[in-house]
View 1 (tube, rainbow, N blue to C red):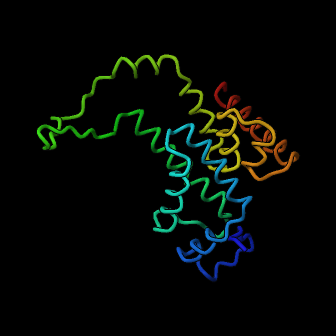
View 2: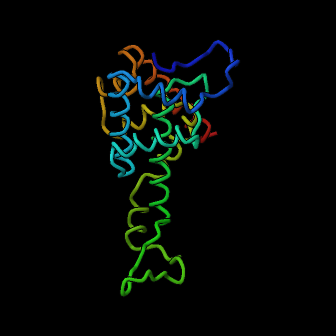
View 3: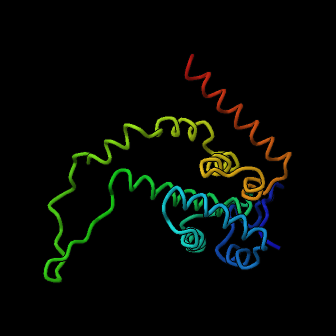
Length: 196
């Protein structure tokens, strides 16, 4: 039996799962749960460029080391998907702003540059002119905090449809339809707020 969200309000064991509880639950993940994690890792891998298995492994590592903690009201699979989303977002953000140190060797000795170049590269300028970052940022702002909607949007970005989305989200057809309607309402509300 894996960790399930506890909505009873009973926090006698603490508000968050311990590393041992998480370790035990990860070891007992079902084939369906592992498939959902794999599907989510495909989505986030496409966004961040991090290998799928590395995303899953890093989500386990962060949970087990206590760098990310899982509240008792959150299921294990949505929690791990949220960790993967965070890892992918951090990687994407770091790539955008160029926070990757480059090691240069000269005669086997590390040579450090004098400082970070502040100038925008021609590639960055061209990409910024044609990408949809402002629109995507508004979509993410409208759904922030709703993990199911965030996963739905990430799946849609990755061109998933139908069964793939249902698998990723762990819902049936009606559940997917309900999430799509919820997303549409959120985006309409956000659009209405921008025009007023």
